[in-house]
Length: 234
Image (tube, rainbow, N blue to C red):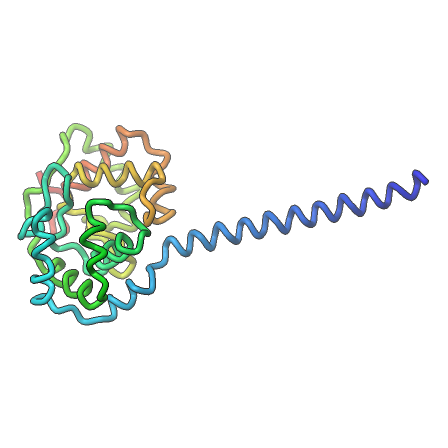
């Protein structure tokens, strides 16, 4: 009897191991699928990008945005509202769609974003914002730890955001050059804490290990970058 039990137990152990491996494989596949979904733009984003934007129509739609972001698109230097002027059209489209469709939580923007039901209107306003000249007086940090900030930026940020903070329109990577320090700091803290829903997983992995002092240093450096030619403004 005991002799017959041992093979049965061995078979159960093998079956349990096989089930466990299958569960682990499925979980890993789900994680990879979630990461791909997070990284990939929503279909509405691709539809809006495929449309030719009309800056004149976009200017009319932008009038409600100007209340907070200003007519110049400069936003507020205290970081309450980001600078939009000169941001990549693809980035503006993605953020508007993500906020509208709940992929990114932004209670202040949501009432405006949900009015943009037509992807042509999104394409128009993004085209208008993208062609606005970038102001040169954005909010910056204290400037007391720029050497460390430069080292961290070149190590962890430059590959995606560019040496001059110019971003990458094709990959929906925002330009950082000229953006307000307080706004960037608020966003990177949210990303590091996993609280920004549409942040890329790679960005979360890079930001999560940072101390708050390191976040402040790298963001201060990034806020001083100038995508129009100079690596760093005084």
